[in-house]
Length: 104
Image (cartoon, rainbow, N blue to C red; front, side, top):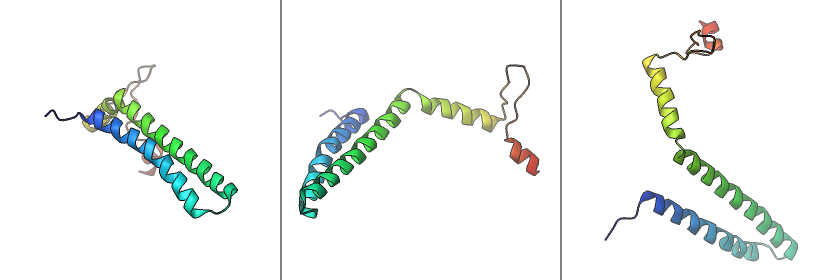
């Protein structure tokens, strides 16, 4: 039996959440509120939160896939090695923010 890839498991988890969360929300709204207006408000606000959460998860996953992880690793490695960035004018840029330099 072949082990599923992490990518496949990740997408399956997102799909399950996107399917189960609205159904759970509607059943909760039916149990929690007696008035139909209150029920509809609970469902609408809950669906907004679900969509926002799914959007954040997908944006984070896309940023991971497009290599921001490697870019952050390269920046942290350069800072750890003491490599200084060079500006367009050819001057070395400081490694620490100005407020830290002024505090010393």
